Image 1 (cartoon, rainbow, N blue to C red):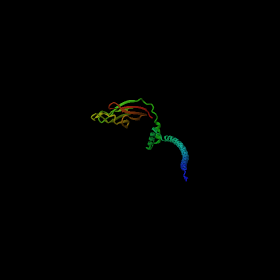
Image 2 (image 1 turned 90 degrees about the horizontal axis):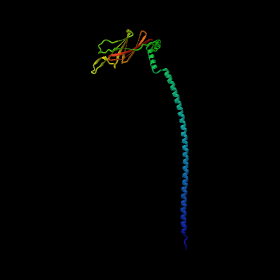
Image 3 (image 1 turned 90 degrees about the vertical axis):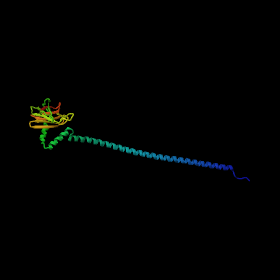
Image 4 (image 1 turned 120 degrees about the vertical axis):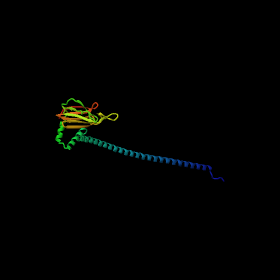
Amino acid sequence: MLSDYDPSARYRNRAAQRVSRLFSTLIVIVMSAVVGFWLGGQFAAEQQISYREQAKSLEEQNDLLQETVTELRAEAQTANTRYIQLKKDYDAQIPEGPMQGLVTLVREQLDQGMAPERLAFLIRSARPPTDCTQPETKRFIVSTPAYKGPQSVVSVADGAVRVYGEGASARNEQGQPEAWFDPGKKITVHFKSGEKVDTKKGTLPIKHSVVVGGREYRFTVEQGSRSFARVVFDSCAYP
């Protein structure tokens, strides 16, 4: 009796199973790829939407910053214009330079009790000098502790004004005092007119003016040759 077992059918069934598994695997791979591509597309779309929203937000922030910068520039320009105006008002009310010094001097004189009318008269009288003489030069010996000679005096305006002075002795290499004065140190200069004596102390040159007989005598005392001080002076009509 022949067996019903068919070897060829067995091989066909195995082949069919392998093909079926292969197709199943391919289907899974294809479906995974499709799902992956779909998810990737969804993610990309979401990212694109997110980037667009960020870009829109940044653009709005940039517009806001531009508006803020424009407002700040306008405010800065307004503040600068205001500052310039305030400075002009300040300079007009509180002068600078020589004018500031004169205002301070006038205030001090008024605080010390000078009558405003007297001060105004003096200011009006202080016009540019007129009828001035040509400068002249004379000299006198500056007295020192080591000087034993007679007092040396410069006399001007027919003796109406006399100028003389004293200073510190110069020192030799051994440190001993000399008869002549040291021009690098302070000296004292006296300007005598009648019974009045004006005394000025300081280093040379020294400037001073004296009013005598309707004229103002202007003096500059400066260093001369050894032992001497040179006096340069002129006179102008006063007032």
